[in-house]
Image 1 (cartoon, helix red, strand yellow):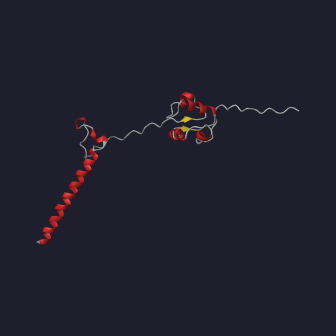
Image 2 (tube, one colour; image 1 turned 180 degrees about the vertical axis):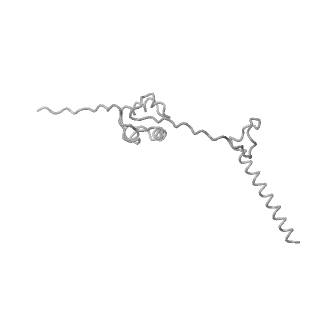
Image 3 (cartoon, rainbow, N blue to C red; image 1 turned 120 degrees about the horizontal axis):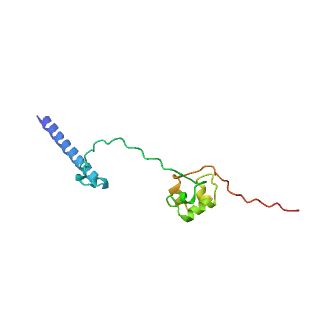
Length: 138
């Protein structure tokens, strides 16, 4: 008889513990900003699973800006690139690596870190003019 009472006590303790843990997880979910939407909006109550949605449509891939051929207007669409940075990028073309934005064009590393995943390099369509050294006349 004692064993049955001990087992019943353990089961009751386990049930209370899991109930408290479920309440804590519900409170955690309720404190997140996305769970603060009113229940009248058709969203499920906090802590409850929402019905499975239709398959999410993958986002369109973002068009990357070509450093060697982009116009100033295209360069200005990049985050952290203003007029001065776009002018530096254009003046120091062609680039053989993205890292040359810092070493060759002199852009701050923070600007480079914000644009590195949004740019690409292609062969320049029009070769940059190179100054020709004048041959000494004898």
